[in-house]
Length: 241
Image 1 (cartoon, helix red, strand yellow):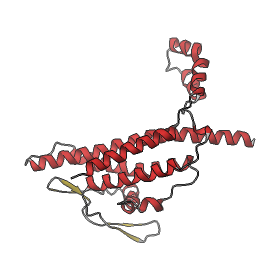
Image 2: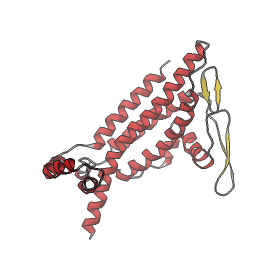
Image 3: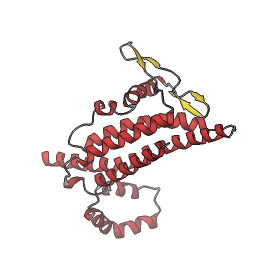
Image 4: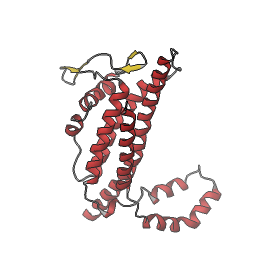
């Protein structure tokens, strides 16, 4: 029974390691969305033009999704690392304390966080005040920098932190491979949504396909490290004056 539980845990860790790669892409997507909207806003302001409709929403809504992904990356990486990633090193990053505290204000209070625009730049207008679960007043200092800078500086540091943790982990063989689950695929192929001809084609090659996937030695951790390095370089390039 113990061996079965260990196998289940290892399989889960391999899946999460693969999902983690996708979440890095999602994090990068949201960051690029925010930066692009900020750049558009600034360019329009410098040209004495109104920015396109939806620019403010792209920043405000994008930031909400972006900040929640910090928690996702922290927790998912902890699932397959040898040790947990706590908030302590994240809070030590540039603007890390703000991301840690403001996420609660956004998630639990619905605070939009970003509601100030000056000369093309988006800002957190002032310190955020909220009550914690015990009714205690919490004051979250607003960053002095504009939202674009805050997101880029934090992301550069966060990518570096995750890279360090992933690069230093012990590579175990059970993490190698994809997140392919033959039982999940078989269950879907058995559904009414799949045409009969597709079911027949799948049945003819299912074992062969599974054998190919099983033999795959793809390293999701190595791929994640490469993605994080790319993200870090992208951030640093856009922080240049």
